[in-house]
Length: 205
Image (cartoon, rainbow, N blue to C red; front, top):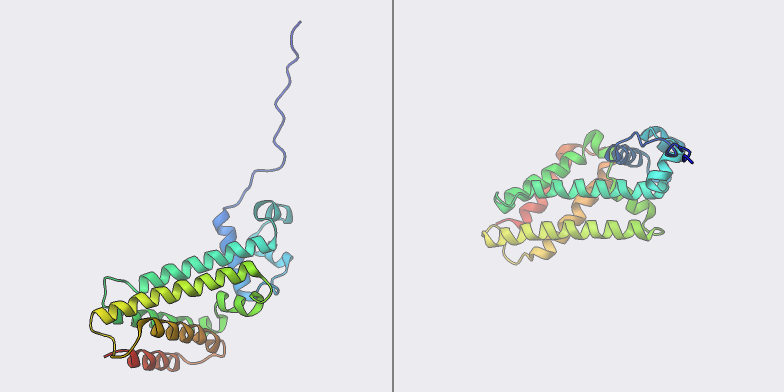
């Protein structure tokens, strides 16, 4: 007796028609502009060009996608710091490049948009442990990178006497993140630049 041919069952659902990285970047842009609570699910779906089912299937939920977007922002920020504090250049020269980058990012239109990390810290850290953990690690990584630059400056004879590299790094971290907040008010670039110059001059020989 011949066996009856049974056609293979079709896969349920449609294949994913999106690039994971592009979706995360679009979500990051939406959260960056409007904050976590200010980005409604319909607005997020519109920004990412996804259906509710696709977004939940790929990322779990809004919070899951937000964590990925925050991770992406943090990774980009730390990579940029590494470029600005290029170890092949003089340590103080690298620190000036790093600070000039912050001046650019905290002035004009960019300054008014602000920083996703700082905005998220103010909005969610008190009630979201996953977010708090990420932001704490980000600030620790930033401080460590700046501290290494100050240690190099000290070894190169560029650091003023009685300046502790670790303390200087902590002070600079607080200052640049403070610039993010002040920049939201539309402070002119020249004011931001004079601020960072004054601090670095105190640390330089």
